[in-house]
Image (cartoon, rainbow over all chains, first blue to last red; front, side):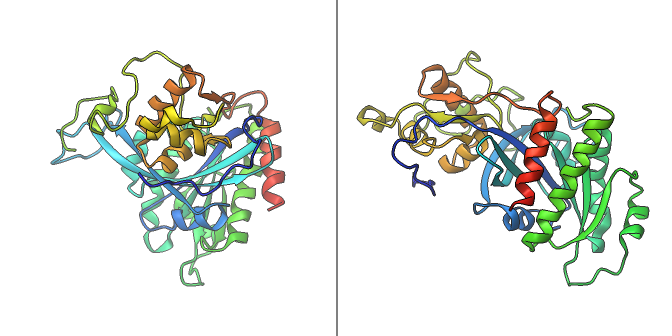
Length: 204
Length: 120
């Protein structure tokens, strides 16, 4: 096995305090730019691993032809932002297919919130993610990814099309742009602080 | 891939048995994707026979989440959870305190994250 280590710890760094890890999910349809956004804001090149998910909780999803299948392997792309000595933020891109969301209890549990990337060419591909976070009462923002510079719709039109509540921020963004990505994350955390302080902890 | 047994995640199905040696038992500390772990010692000669542990000790010289450890070891998360639980039980890794949104300390962490993002 080749070494996957990017960073060698300095000598004498064997017993640092262990920071707390928190996470934000980046969701959206296939090709919406999730991994691009993670890479734009992460301090490390996005990492990839895989997890075996059971489909026991898949519910009413249409699985014609694969009824025998009880587990599936799902790739996880993620990046990291070291907030300070005590907190490390991980950003998890999620599988492109909306139906996989039903298997992501562990990933969603304890998340600070989520970014849903919307692709206006295929707006319906982000519906499953929106449903998922609404049902869980988790803070989330809709980031409209402008692929070709221009978006033919306004944020208000997209908000109307998605029919999300007023507490959900809808903003124009560019998944490739670090500053834009930062702004999306800041907007999300501000919303999480508002919701956490207001109606109590509805995140878990 | 198309017909596996349900939820028990015996890593023997993922890798040939000699590839990664982990305990089969359910005992040991619970770890999830966000559990942070750090090595308590540097790898030594005895670890050479268990290369995934040797490598885990090396990359965990600085604290890492289980997700990141899995990526660095190029092993499935389900295997690394078991491996890390074994290594914690044996004292080779120590784990950070579990943190979940919804904890009382939440606002403090959210504020720290907000400040950290603004400072990027």
